[in-house]
Structure formats: C-alpha cells, structure tokens
Image 1 (cartoon, rainbow, N blue to C red):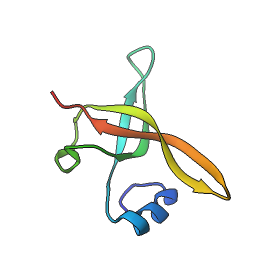
Image 2: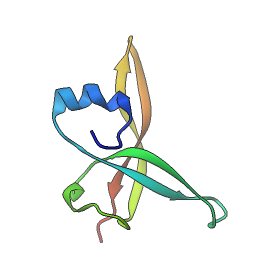
Image 3: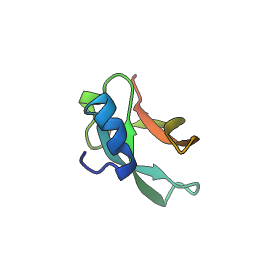
Image 4: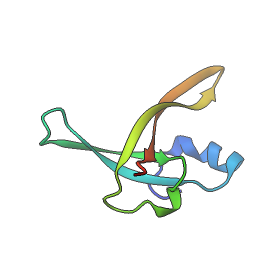
Length: 79
C-alpha cells in the first residue's frame, strides 16, 4: 500500500496492487508547492520515479453508503 491513503485499501483488495506516489504540485505563484499522496493511473505507471511529470484529473475514487466519493488521480505525462 505504500504511502496511499487508507481509503484505497478496499480498491486494492478488489483490483490488486497499484502504484501510489506522493506528488508535489506547483502553487499558483510558481514558487510554493503542496504535496499529496495519490494513485498513479494510466500507461507507464511502472516507470514512475522521482521527477516524473504528471497531470492530475478528477476521478471517481469509491462509493460509500451509496455516495460516490471523488478525488484526484495522476497520470504520467508521456512525450
């Protein structure tokens, strides 16, 4: 499970292993950053390492008590 948030445990039990990472996002001023743990999706996830550029997208994360929970996941930028 690595650095993944605990809400990913159910998904891991259903779908098997996945890649997670702590991602540093650039702030609006270009100087400050904020880091957050997230799931890495898409092709090239096995090649993710420190310094890999990613793009974030809003995704359905899970459903709890009939309510769909949304969050974000990241996908490596392929050139």
